[in-house]
Length: 297
Image (cartoon, rainbow, N blue to C red; front, side, top):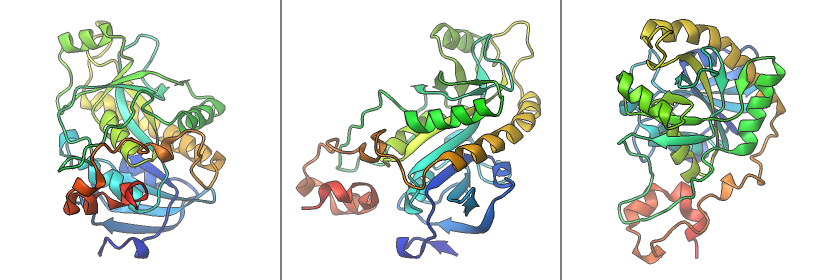
């Protein structure tokens, strides 16, 4: 049954977004599936809520179970808003990426901290008579990203603590010319989802970190096999167990509440440009969960 009443929803403090296999983490208990209705439509899949390492967590399959949705077909706004409805204050996103650097090898982990966005999709909750300009100079939560990187390093995995992620529309992979240009721009990895998620998490005042599982060298590397689905799945299968271990270790080390030092939980402060009296009622109602604390008399 779909749920939209916040009062009746289970609560979680940490969100995990990625493939379906991430649900199968040893130690996850008290599991229930929640199908949410949001003001922005339906999320990609039901949320799987449970307890992991003593923390309440919510998992979501970004592309839907069975990988049914193209990157441009994902309802990013519904996904992030759904996490917000469940009370999530921190999201760890897991995705596969291609490498644009020789020293970032397939099966490495990259905790990207910057984005170059080349997509053309909806990437804001606002508009419709309400103008909001968030700060995005530091796109990910430094505290959450460091916690995840430290967890990976503590497990002895080859991990990179930072990097620039170029986000393309897809669904096709790059041409060789595009790949070489992205490399010349000093980008580190290439993917199709991260920038959109990061912008929406900032607007939702959710801490966001992205753990990127390197599967290939895109198509720029003349001496390596060009990116293809078979290669991605082969390397992703190896990396998914590492990702589960990193998630479990990260969750175990986080406190139950979102930290205040990073500033993510106050990201909308002083960003609403439109006078409250001029915001259309239907627009304000749609984003009430995000902005009410700033628009109350």
